[in-house]
Length: 285
Image 1 (tube, one colour):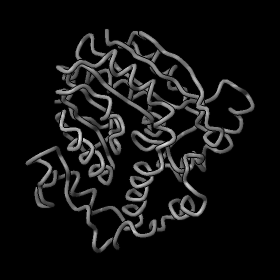
Image 2 (tube, one colour):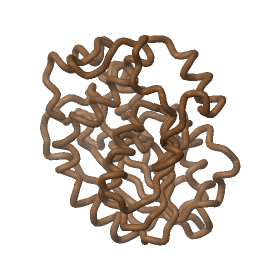
Image 3 (cartoon, rainbow, N blue to C red):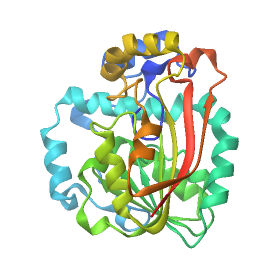
């Protein structure tokens, strides 16, 4: 769904039809950004404080190369997607707030080092305990300013951002973290099996993996509807798939032992395509 948030194609998250059409067609939302030639987001935010003030010339080589290679349309879509994730997810976040609060408070300690897969605009930052250190893996640079603004407002954690995807994480990240978090991210990775395997590799022995993901429905009628809509969803929602069996993938990963997993449905009928959810915690053995 685009790294921490639900895609516009999921609809029902209070985005009106005109705004959704503007977003999906790649047209800039009114009054938000300048032209691609006057891009205000030219920094590679790597963290809070001095690191976050690095100029373009100090970008990581791969990130700078990808940024230069991206077409104006690709940049526009990424900016618009980040905007939608920040501003059109209020109803969703309200609905899942209690579940997030419970699972984060039960399984994350202040002294933990956390890796969040698909940091997005940082909606989970509100739930971390004071003093926790977070590394956010995020391929979309336009999400960064929103996440860093939240972290600065909270003034209670250390946040660094790793530019990349969970399928291409660096070897130096392996075995470094106490907790891994993924919320609405595994729906949009290209290879979810590899993604889950890499998440396990980044955890220390005994580390926990907290996940909240939308999945394919167990209702045959809704499953068929999700299957029909899946290509359109992927096209307009940053590669998001409606038919992932993410719970099965995590359970079949030999490095994990499932501690808890529950299935639930969103109450918002406008979000019926992504209504089936799983929430759980797995421990690395």
